[in-house]
Structure formats: structure tokens, C-alpha cells
Length: 192
Image (cartoon, rainbow, N blue to C red; front, side, top):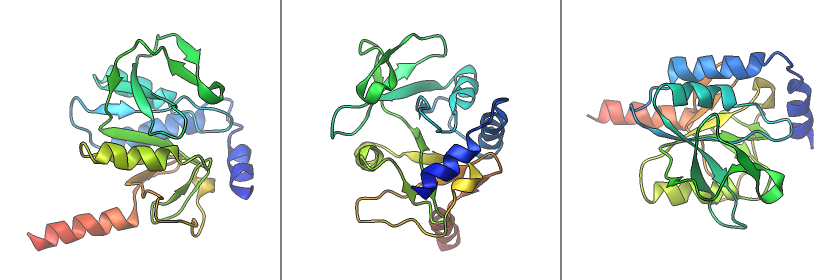
């Protein structure tokens, strides 16, 4: 797939420049509640490494968590700290031990293959994020932040009724509030 090839071309970043730039853009532009719970991910393959951001958020006092896959169900997030030992989970993804506490994220960092200016994304096709986002939103407000390389942006991502729109996209180049979310906030501001 072309999206995977674009991400793979960007992933050769031995100095961690992209991960550091994502951390800097996120921290400069996205304001979080003091004790917001952050649902992150452990990068696999060519996914942009979000661990420097998660470590910085942990150091600022946020509870961080990693997802555990339960086949065809919404993801469950277990508390994670930088020194925790991880175990191999479904799809051989590194996850916290099942004895660690389960938490409900306020902010979700979302890996992706491609995204567009509307905040739509292509994932791996399993639908885990598209099940997880509405499940969490049925319980509480949730801010979703796509993490990607700038080169992963495409003109338009094909979507269906189950696909979930992201609020922000953060790349090594910028942090962007997505178009639909910007319109939502403008309407809210001018309606008051």
C-alpha cells in the first residue's frame, strides 16, 4: 500500500528527530487538564515513536497508559510508567502486564497509515480505534490526537460510517487542529 511505503520512507530516523519534534509540537500546542489520563501506544514497525512524548507527559504528572488488544473489542488501557516491564500481547505488541490497573483515557494518541485535512485516518484495518473512540466517548469526553509523519497526509481518506474523526494531527512539522473541529469551535464561540 502507498501509505505504508510513505511511512516506511520517513521512519529511517536514527537520531529520533521526528519523535522529538512531535513531542515539542504536542507540548507547545495541546493544552491538557492537569491530571489528564493519556492513552498512548507502543510503536510497532514504522509507526512514529510516541514514547518521548509519553515520557514527557508522565514527568508532568499525567497518568499514561498503553492499550491491550482483546480480539474484535474496544481496546483496554492499562497504566504504564517509563520503567515498567512489558509483556508480549496479541499481534506480538508490547503491553503492560494484565495486573496493572485499567484506566480510561481523556486523551488518545492514535497511530495511523494516512490522514487527511478533515481528520480522517487509515489504520491497519482491524477497526480497533474506530470501536475504542466511541466506546470511551459514551462514558466521557475524549480528545483524539493522530500521530504521524507529515508525508502521510493524503488528499482524501476513503471512509465509511464507522470511521472516527480525529481532533488533532501532530507530525514532525506541526500540530494541527483538524478542519471540522475548528469549525465546531468557531460555531460554538460565535453562537454564545
